[in-house]
Length: 61
Image 1: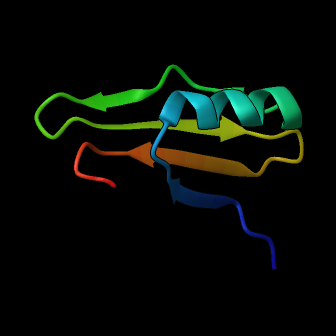
Image 2: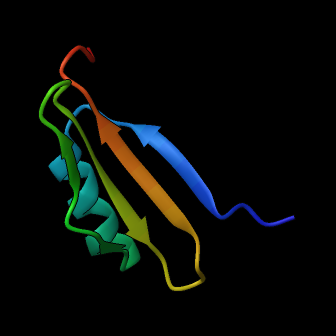
């Protein structure tokens, strides 16, 4: 079995994205922003083909 995609909610989206880019050499997409709900996310791609989706929304603690 191989996991291709995992999603994770974070409080600080930019800080989390920069962490994975810097320490794990991830490649980030341009990001997504839903202006109605203020949901934001990035897809990070890794060399082995795995992807991590980082997400945040305003009502998170």
